[in-house]
Image 1 (cartoon, rainbow, N blue to C red):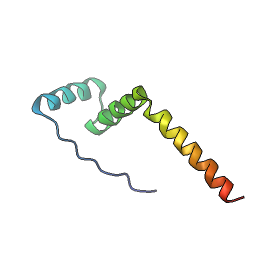
Image 2 (cartoon, rainbow, N blue to C red):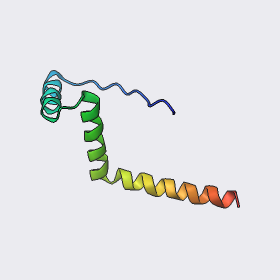
Image 3 (cartoon, helix red, strand yellow):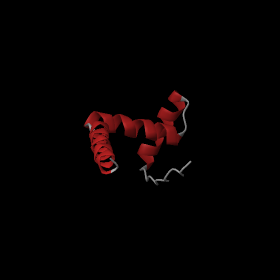
Image 4 (cartoon, helix red, strand yellow):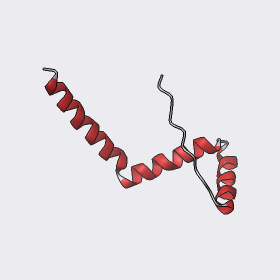
Length: 67
């Protein structure tokens, strides 16, 4: 299984306190909470759908090359 990339996030003290509150309320780690927030934001922006369209286009091109 490929290793997941590690991303460093720098938060202000206020942002860290808010993150701590959210983590406590949800019973999640900081990483879980930030991943969920990131994916929610990506979905809201349409980035997930854009990624899927790009992936499907790449798959079609790859399949045509291998015919």
